[in-house]
Image (tube, rainbow, N blue to C red; front, side, top):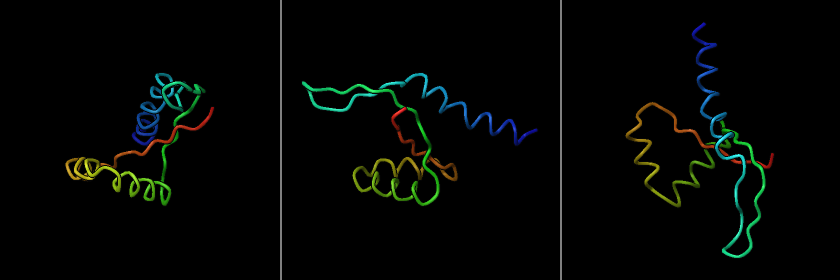
Length: 81
């Protein structure tokens, strides 16, 4: 039962994210392409590579991870829906 609860709990934030950010913008000031997206959590080697890239560009996430302790900070990709 706890495992089912965890699976449901883990899914909920991304479902809410999908509902809140169903569209995204890509482009500059004048030309903007708006299209529907869906969130997907990166896992395994993909997550590790993306986490490295994020930290190469902004060290604040590494500090955030240190403060989070053992909790894994999710890396979420927005893909075309």
